[in-house]
Amino acid sequence: MRYLLLLSALIIVNVESSYSSELNNFFSGELKFIQTSLNKDKNSFEESEGVFKRLDDKSIVIEVTSPFREKYFIKDDYIEIHDLEFDQITKILKKDYEKNIFLSYLIDGFEDLNISNNDSNSFLISDEKTSYYFEYLNKNMLQVRFKDNMEVTNLIKFYKK
Image (cartoon, rainbow, N blue to C red; front, side, top):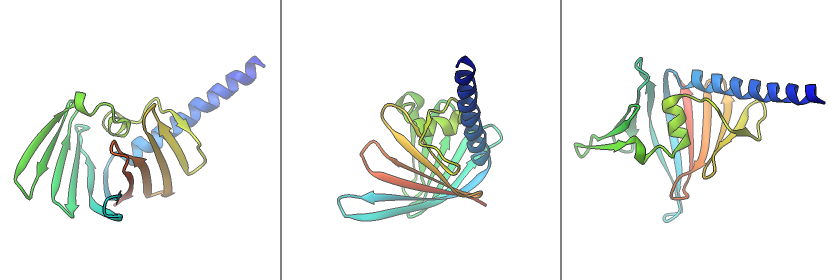
C-alpha cells in the first residue's frame, strides 16, 4: 500500500512537471493571439488581436494591434501600459496584479501547478478564486478560457508563428 501511494505521488508530480515544461516551452517565444470576450451589456462578442513576445531578459511584451493599439511591457515588479492611440502611459505595480495566477505564471513560469480535470490535451489550473481551462488544439495552438474579475468570460487563442 505504501508503494502504491508513493507511485501515485510520483505520477502526479511527473504529470504536473510535464505540463509545466510544455507551457513554459510554449510561452518562451513569440506568439500571435486572439482574445474573445463576451460583452453582457451589448450581448455581443468583442475581439482583440496581437502578439505576445518573451524577451531574452524574461520580460514580456504584449502588443495589441486590433481593435485598439496598446503595448504592455511586463517586468518582474510592474506592468507598463502604453495606449498608442491616446499617447498615454500607465504603470501598475506587482502588488496590484499579483493575485492573477495566469499573469503570475506567464511572468514567473508555470511551476507548482494545481492541475485538475486533465486529459492528454486539456487541463484546469485554479486557485481559490479563478480557474483557467487550457486546451491544446494542436501542437502550435493553445487556448485559455477564464472569467475575469468582472465575471466576463474570456477565450484567448495563442498561435505559434
